[in-house]
Length: 219
Image 1 (tube, rainbow, N blue to C red):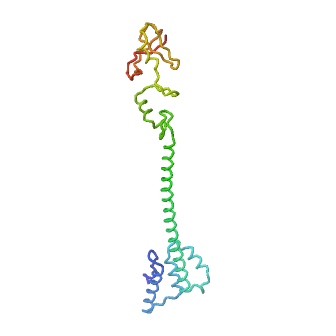
Image 2: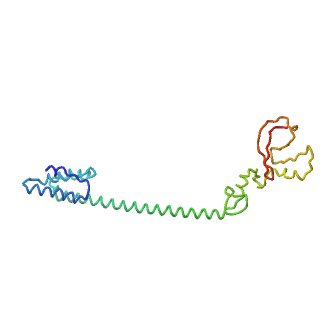
């Protein structure tokens, strides 16, 4: 009797669970223990997990005359089958959704790669004039940045071009070469300065030669 009242549906199929209860009842009846059908129905309903509480409540609301062992067993089997089919459909839908999502990601990456190649092929670099890349990825532009040479954004020419002509000009003391595009001019004559602050900095000439400036000031 203790085994019968202690049975719980925790795993397997509901059919196996019902068969187990009926086998124990048959054994008890075989040794003279009388188990009424209404008690058997109560045992079956009490053995169900909380997830079946809605079904149990619905059955308890029916007339006791309707709650036969066959009727309750049939309702339990129907509920179990419904849940099994629902889980199967959900699993199939999840597989379908995962497959669809995976295919969508693959197609998106392929489309993105195609668009990227197309864009790269049609893009023209405004720095070197070649196609297939933009200025930010231009090797020539990056090389100039690495060389730390000032770049004229409009002409792409190296600045300080006025100093490139210095060697061809006569070495006239006091002569100035003025570049209207720069804010800074250089001289080696301290007498031109009204105020001078000592400041070490590197200056790159037109031939990429680096020289050290001793200071900066006004004159």
